[in-house]
Image (cartoon, rainbow, N blue to C red; front, side, top):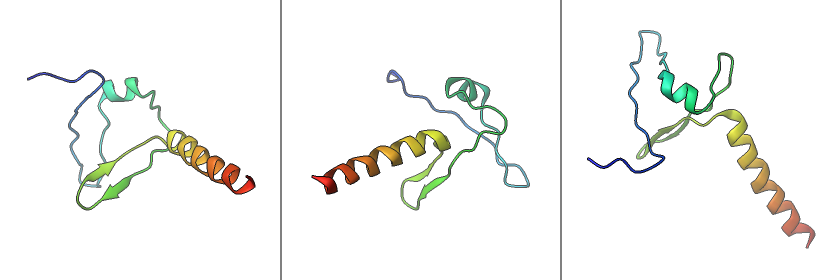
Amino acid sequence: MHKPAGKYAWTATVGEKGQIVIPKQARELYDIKPGDVLLLLGDEKQGIAIPRKDTFAALTNAVFKKEDETEDA
C-alpha cells in the first residue's frame, strides 16, 4: 500500500477515564509537550480532529484579520 507523502495514521487506546495517549512519533512530529493545550473538533459524520490550540488560534486570527480588512475597504 502506497503512503502519500506527509500523511500519517496512528492508533490510540482510550483508557477507563476517557484518556488517550498520543503516540510518541506524533508528539515529536507536532512538537506536543506536557501541558500543551489541544482542541477537540468533532463532526458527527467525519470524526474528530485534534489541532494544537496555537495552530487553531493562528488560523482564526488570519480569518478574522482578512474579514476586518474587508470591512475597512
